[in-house]
Image 1 (cartoon, helix red, strand yellow):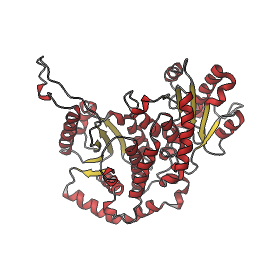
Image 2 (cartoon, protein in one colour):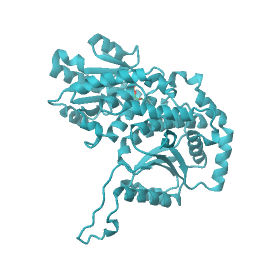
Image 3 (cartoon, helix red, strand yellow):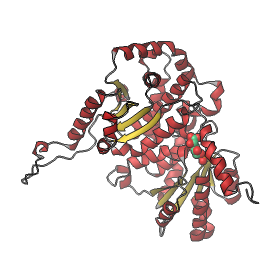
Image 4 (cartoon, protein in one colour):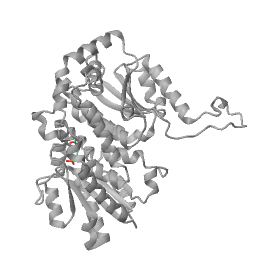
Length: 438
Ligand code: PA5
């Protein structure tokens, strides 16, 4: 199959005539916003380093990430990724998608990847610490400005653990990824920890294609060259000035979700029949919630893991308040095989005899689209396969679509002022700034 056929496809299932017309009008009227997004904007220069995949995931940068990852892979049995939100979601979504023992990367010598810096629960942190016992441990603290409580506190307990176990060898096992000039860089310089640059011109949730996302993925054995190639191909498609706006996939998607918002829908439900995407949902939810949910505007991004959640949230989708529309992520090609063999016991499931679970899962997807289309707008983003290359496409596609979508609603896609409110109360409660080492 040609490369161009391996690109994501955007499908609408049940657009009615009125919506079709309103969508066509919007696609015409907002064209300028697409052109601005394709070019990048001076007002967002500090946040648009991700627009060009080349800037932070060039062959040279990939080479040096792979070299460092190779060294860690030889020495580490456990690699702890310390980070929260944009500082861990992208890497985690890919690593967790391919974590099975059956996936090829696991067949090579790989460290187990653990996560910290994303919780303040002593139970969860103790559980993580317990898993380090007796193993060769490396850690990477990823924090843009090193002010966030969760990664800061986890970094401290993990550093202390390493010093206790490895003594003077501990610094060699400590890495950090932060903005040049930050207090994290200073800590690294003063203590001999390796320091990687967090892109100064990208905010957390847009950093999948940089040191932030790529180093942990490479340590886990993910093919980051292929992932970057997918993102680059998507960039080429989405920043192709010659393509007609009405045919631009991310613009079509951004306009349609905004049209639904204007019509009163308040939730976008991302759904798929592949549990491998479980952690990708978290990345997607963070991207849209933090980028778009501001100034009393925005669609609430939610996700549903089908077919399991057809037996819970499925009731609400089909029959509850009509506040949501659904975007399916559908994987077209068969990735795995498992046939239901005939059985002599009468369990009344004979109609499945000889069918592969791929076919059964596919029937469930088609049936769900048919049923839900009776009630709410349904869209599909279809990918040929679930692999590193397509993850690269997904990261770039959604980042670009989210940026466009925010432009359509008129909010800043790159800040998150609402996240600050609770922090002031929490820091007050914890006495930040009152002690001698504030
Ligand atoms: O997208 C964002 O900018 C945020 O979600 C951050 O990634 C998150 O708050 C973590 O910030 P930091 O890397 O500074 O600890």
